[in-house]
Length: 171
Image (cartoon, rainbow, N blue to C red):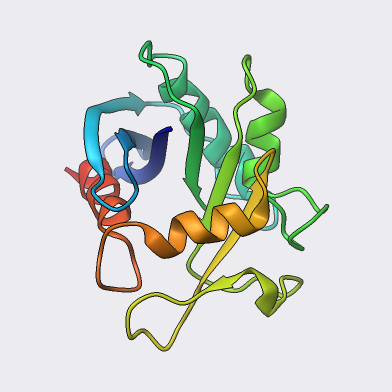
C-alpha cells in the first residue's frame, strides 16, 4: 500500500500583506520503515483567510493543488486533521477533501488535539506520551486506520513521517 501524507504551512508576506502556503507531500510505503518513494511541494499564492469553524475552506484548496500535480500512484491519503469532527458523520477537512477529489481515495486523518465531539474511541497512544493522537477516516476501516497510525515508524507521539512532511512544508 502506498500512502501520501500531506501538510500545509502558511507564510505571511508582510510586504504584500497577504498569505501564501507551502504544501508538502511525501509518498511512502511500509508503515514500520517509511520507505520514502517521492517528495512533493508546491506554493499556493492566494490563500483564503482563516474562518473559525471553516478551516477546510482555507486548507482544502492547498491540498488539492498539490494532489493534482502528483502523477505517481498512491492508495491512501493521510492528512493533519480530522476527517469527521465527531468521528463518524460531521464533516471535517478530510471528508470535504474526499468529496472534492477527482479520483476518490481513502483518507486517514491524524489530529493532535481532541475535538469536543470526538470520543476516546478515536485515540491512539504512541510511545510514552501522555497525550494521544486522534484518528478518523473515510473509505478506510477505523480500526485499520488506528493500527496504521499506531505502527508508523517512530518512538514518540508523532510518527517520524509526520515530522518529515512538516519539516518539508516549512523549508
